[in-house]
Each structure stands twice: as C-alpha cells, then as structure tokens.
Length: 424
Image (cartoon, rainbow, N blue to C red; front, top):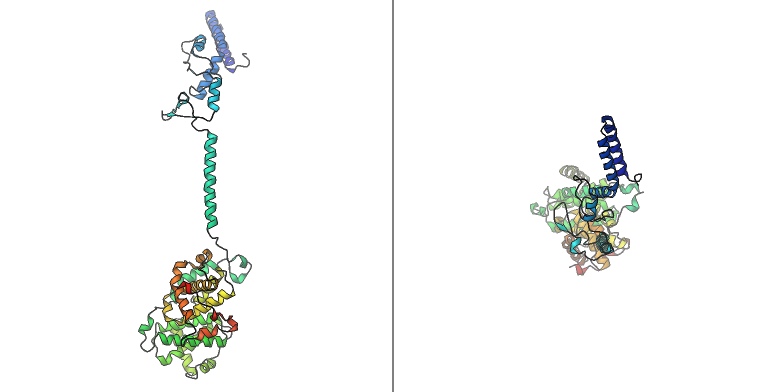
C-alpha cells in the first residue's frame, strides 16, 4: 500500500531524514516519537487523499473520495493541527440520478457562487440544452438572412464578358464614368440662357437643331458627332449673343468642329455651304470656326448624353429594340430647349428607362441599372414623363426631323412604337 501511495512515501522520506538527525544527537526518544508519526501517517492515507481532493476542488463538492462523515473522520484525526474536515453529503443512487436528470434541481442542490456570494442553480439548464437552443436560434437567423437575399435582386457584372477585350478597358471603366459624372456639369449650360439673347429664342434653336439632325443623317455621320454638335451650339450661344441671320452659320460651323473631333472622314467646307443654300461663303465659315473655338477655349472633350447612353444600355442588358427607342427618345430631347435643365447622365438614364417601359409595358428598373446610373426610378419619373409626351407628339407640328429619321427601315421603324402612356 505504501508503494502505491505517494503521500505515504513523502512522509517516510521526511521521517528518515529526521531519523538521521536523531541518531546523530543520540536521542532515542525522538526516534520512537517519529516512528509513531510514520505509523500514524500510514494509517491516515485516506485522509491525506481527501485533503488533496478538497484543495483541488476548493469547496464541498461531492467526490468519490469524500465518503466519510464527521464521525469517521474523528476517528483518524490524531494531530491537533490537522485542517478541519468539511462535511460532505454521501453519494447515493438518488443523488446521482438527480444530477443526471433534466428536471430542475431541488433547493438543496443550489450552491453558493464564491465570486458574488449569490445563490446560483448550477444545474438549472443542462449545457447541451443551452447549446442546442443557441444553434436553433442561429439556424433561424440564417434562414431569415437567406430569405432576404432571395428577395433582393442580384447585381449583374456587366463587364464580365469583356475582360478579354482591350478596347472595353474593364480595369478602369468604372473610374472613367465616375469622372464623366463628376465633370458633366462643365458641359451643361444655364437652362434660361435664351433670356440673354436679344434676337433669337428657343423656338429658333429647335428649328436649327431639327434641321441639323436631318443633315447629320444625310451625311451618315457618327452618333457622337450629333451630340457634340448640339453641345457646342448651346455652350457658344450661352456666352455669345448672335443675330438670327448668323444662327444657321453657327449650326454648320458647330457640325464642322464636331466632325473634326469625332469623324475619320470630315465633310469639306463647300459641302456645308451647299446644304445651307449658299447663304454663307467659305471665309465666313472659317471666321466663325475661329471665333467659336476661342470662345469655348478649345474644350471639345465633354461628356454628352451619348457617352452615358452606351454604358447605361449595357447595364440594362437591352436588346436592339430598346436601344433604338432610347436613342429616338433622347434625340427628341435634343430639340427641346426645356430639357437643358437636366444633366446628360439623367437624360440618358431616363431615356433607357422610358424605352424599357415602352417595350415591356411595365415599369422596369433593375438594381444593376440603378447602381451604374446612380439614379433611382423615382428620380427618373419626371424626365421620363416629358419624354413620353415628346414621343406622343413626335409626328405632329413642324419639327419632325427625328420622327422621319426613325421611321425608316435603317432604324427599325422605331418611331411607330406606341408611347408608354401608363407612365403619364
């Protein structure tokens, strides 16, 4: 038993050391007393284990070692300085069954928390039950999040198919359009600039632009040229007063400047003189060109509605019908002086939205379109209603250049599409 009990071995070792000291002093009585302590220590081996267990646990917890009551411990207490023995309730079958059961414990099972001194019920809810409830709550929360994700419309990566196309500049196309959106105010003009023109008005401007749209179509010029030409006219007229006799000269000169900036093959000055019915000569056209570029400070790099149209049509994942109808609607806006109050990006976004509603016969504006245009459906409704009204009266009145252009097979007879009256 001593070989298997480390506590007894330690006591024997201590007794042997004391025995050596006693032999050196020749005190035989000390040897007998020490031997008595050794025998007492061997007899109290169970109490030594009990003391170790109580020190480790730190309280009167039930233990397989603490099976003796106060009466039993009194029999083994031989030294007055031995630590007091805490009374522990014996482990019985009933107590084991109570600890392992799921029901609430009895009041005697409550223990005192040493940290705060309050009565706590250590077995009020089993730990595995708490974990199960937490897991169920987490699963319910994840289900709610997943349901929200299902309801939300996903945003489409519109540039994923063009990553191999170097001309699409996928790496920084978003930065480009952020820059366009930032500087588009520089290309805008005051919506009431005609008030400072003594000899011309907004109706004359509409007639000029409607005629230039037909000339642009006859010369088969690029779309970029048309939008830049209108922008040059408005920016010039907003800072320089012009007589009505020179208004057509301003128009043909703006077309010449836009062609030099956008086109590969530029119409010659003589062609522009011919289409203006020889109202001006070559010198007048070149002199007006010098005046206009100096007034505009040679700034031809401005974001027009066309710049935004291409990006917004891609974001809307539009087909050919929607694309043609969107350009038809926005060209109707070029003629209207009142549409100068809207920035180019808003005109483009509203044109795409109006075209989608007209083709699908429902209000349609996806999260992807809202992300790339930075306009919500509510922000587009006012401009879209004006576009529908322009579409409704496109074939009436004197300004029918856009209507005739889009009523051809080249543009898929888009002008014959019924307007989206439900937006009104």
